[in-house]
Image 1 (cartoon, rainbow, N blue to C red):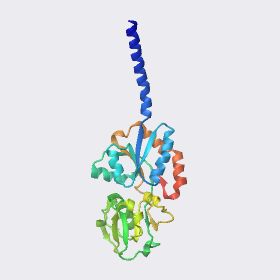
Image 2 (cartoon, rainbow, N blue to C red):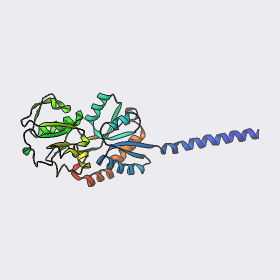
Image 3 (spheres, rainbow, N blue to C red):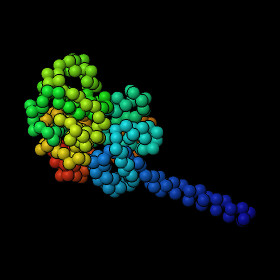
Image 4 (cartoon, rainbow, N blue to C red):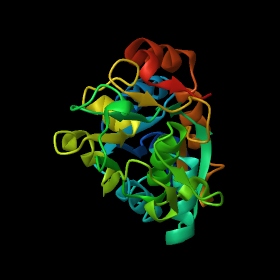
Length: 266
């Protein structure tokens, strides 16, 4: 009997030890967050430090394009990503069937038009080659910016996803060149001008306030977001991530590091 009691007691200790170990194992989970290079990566590295104080471990994974971060998130290779605005996510969900959800705002990068050949839009010659992003959402954003500057006119029903086919007036007969968004800053020498997303402009050392020859209105639908798989949106770690990102420390870091080229959206 004593032997049996000892065995039962030992088994009980094993169960208790197992239960005690479970929370520790959960705390060892590392959450991979996908970002694009430049400010998104820099900010998430800072957020990583803030989150660590709350027990949330983050690994920042950098991508060089807009397509892979959502593909990786949908496939389960990432826990979340932070690099896109809502219209782009909506387009990806519609086109690819991703079950992804926005859980919070991050920052806004004002899109600007940059040039190494002219100092104003008025200097663009007839037939000038103007680069725009080749994805539907950011391409439409660029065309809307060109329209706001009086360089062209789009059809009334074009909306946020306007394409060159929606151009109904083009007085200077601008040659719209569609390129991958990340390539546009590197292509400025080959173009007369280009509409560049703020994060890629910052990565290339371009400042929308001092370097752009035109810039979009800061108020608009293009605030960036954090996205997760829809099934994970209510997970405790998501709330922890948002708490770290939306902290006063992160806001101060963004303001002091990027000045007017990046605007906090929360």
